Image 1 (cartoon, one colour):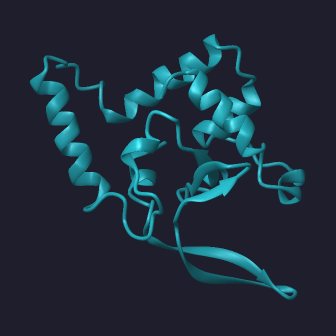
Image 2 (cartoon, helix red, strand yellow):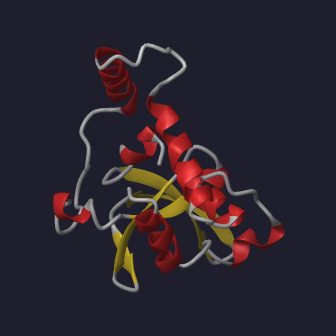
Image 3 (cartoon, helix red, strand yellow):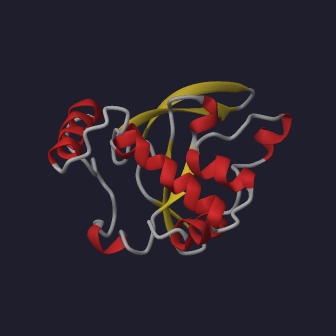
Length: 154
């Protein structure tokens, strides 16, 4: 996920819901949810295409609280990005084109190498193309999302 999306977890976010015939914006705690026993969070408020469910990999679950009732990460994404990019420079990665966001590229490569279909890759990375049928559901089942997240080892 994008760094800014990690900072969305446990925050109050504006979501658009249908009330009767009207769509309204309401505040909602962006907390963890479950589907088929799999913990996930809804992230992606950057664009309509980026909104998606992200399953927590098994390797992360021991480090999470039993229930997310508040912000998972304190602070904001820009200062965190600056610190993490500074860390990259400190460990010898001096190419200024290599930034924290670059870590999404190996994830895409690993999904492709694992033979994850293109549509699932788009969904996992928040690059899903909008189609007329998007209003029919909320993307693939979380069980499918989790399978691919665990398969690539994050």
